[in-house]
Length: 365
Image 1 (cartoon, one colour):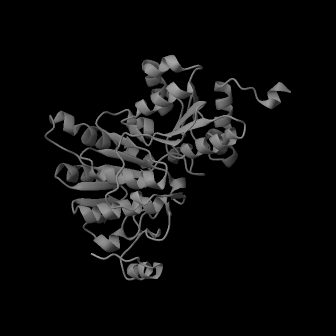
Image 2 (tube, one colour):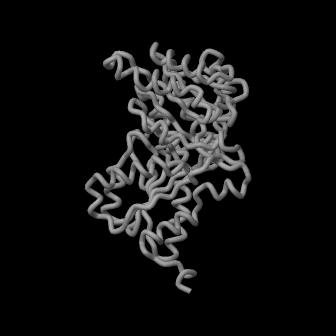
Image 3 (cartoon, rainbow, N blue to C red):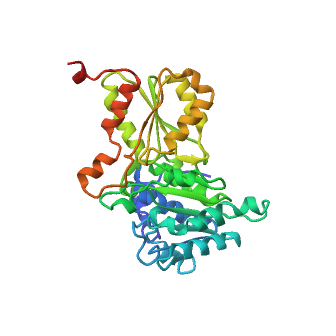
């Protein structure tokens, strides 16, 4: 069959009159907003499988509190995009029951801080039922929504739940960084037969990232449990998840100007944790710094440190592992205090220099 090149104008006309609810035009751009990556992943999976549906507060007629579900109610209707009352325990229980009955719900929490109202459903009903039923009861459900600190929303709305949910066997826990992460991992989560906690970040929704042609395929998925080396390096390993990956990349750029070559690993998956990727990197760089937005006690960095201590990479370390975390306090409301309670690029830079025993110029003066 003869093939011909399609002109850009023809591509544009093909999109006119077609229902397409992501503001990122797949054919004509090479970047995509995180919000659109999540939206397109849900849209494609709902087209692919009629058992997939969405429920949560304001997900339908309002298009979602953060517009992640924009347009899906108009496309799929009341039966598959469902607005719920403000009762997390109630609608999370409905979602878990629907999953047990064979459907594939996407349960949106307006923020994961509100998931505390439904934690019995997430932990005792969703996470444990497959094990307690000897494999008879499957719970294919995705709990998703913004996680961690935003800006000026106070102590009750600024917590990172990666360690909370990562602690519980029976759950898979994902914490993506880029648009490609969000798109590939959300599609994988929806297809997974297990309950998945999908931790997004409110401040990342409006950020655009380059995406590959492969990532725009409807068949594109990223395997859950696999980390990604965002930047190769040879002097020190920086490990993070979600928004702090960006801090690590910024710090790596700054340190590169001083001759320090950082390898940056985007964990993406909290449970299962790809410790093999971290070990391989540490065995090359001999130094490790972990970065996260959550509290220091019993955090993701603590778990990575423990597994490195217990594994083959420990003998390759030339210095103790250093953790960069949020401050060990409830999040302050005042902006200047909030800024001080969150990890920043300067904290990563100082920790790298501490680990490498590089004294700052100001200290030498």
